[in-house]
Length: 165
Image 1 (tube, rainbow, N blue to C red):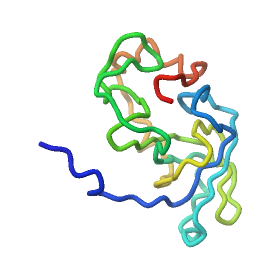
Image 2 (cartoon, helix red, strand yellow; image 1 turned 180 degrees about the vertical axis):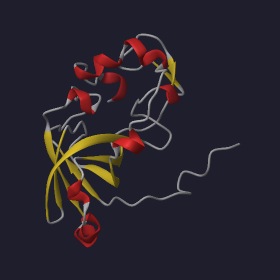
Image 3 (cartoon, one colour; image 1 turned 45 degrees about the vertical axis):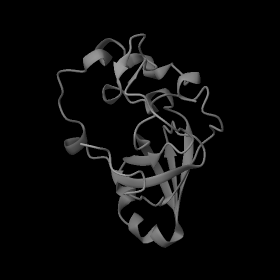
Image 4 (cartoon, rainbow, N blue to C red; image 1 turned 60 degrees about the vertical axis):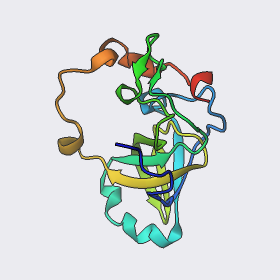
């Protein structure tokens, strides 16, 4: 099966993610490495009504576009390992559709501005969607973590480097 044409599916940003990270190099590689980093989401004003009831959730899932990356490799050496791995067994930012995901703490909402904590995203990143995090839905019991079994704790200290910049 061939990949669809590049412009076959079009997503429109619903806002921008604001963070203190102005460069890809040296950024945290997962929210666990940015636990205390605060940022905001500037949602397009026309969508503000859709935020109703979201403040009742402590965490939200952000889906966004890795807008500063281009190209991808199906095999790569991820940040938390020294061995080459298949792209889809990693969370590497260079992907066929350049879609990222982070679960962050929702601090408060002021109009169309969401104040968040635990943001590991480049400043100005286009936001595609927001979903509420629900422990019963999203924290499923798992008993296998593949190659990350012994490497996941590294996400708290490792920073991005030239591999994905």
